[in-house]
Amino acid sequence: MKVRFTPRAAQDIAAIADYFHARSPSIARQVRAAILHSLQTLILFPQVGRAQTVEGARKLVTRKYPYLVLSACIAHAVLHESLDFAFSKRLKDDPTAELIE
Image (cartoon, rainbow, N blue to C red; front, side, top):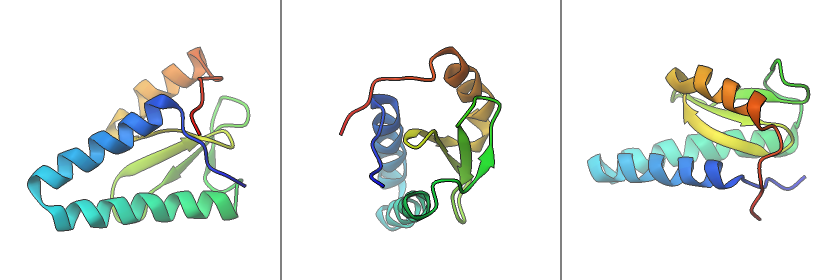
């Protein structure tokens, strides 16, 4: 399986990296590693995570940091868990967002 990101997911990852890098490059590397570990888990086990109300969508929590990977065989977004409600609504409104390779 290959992970492909929506434009929003790519923006989310860049924003997370920028936020932590400005505060501590070493913390930025740790957060990035946790998110990448979750993505590797998703590649190995596509059905990992909690099923969502949108058919085929799943939510995977990153290890050690409160970020969520929301997917439907693709990573739709990576966001802080406090933003989960807003994303769930957005995914219901547009479950077929444009992808980037």
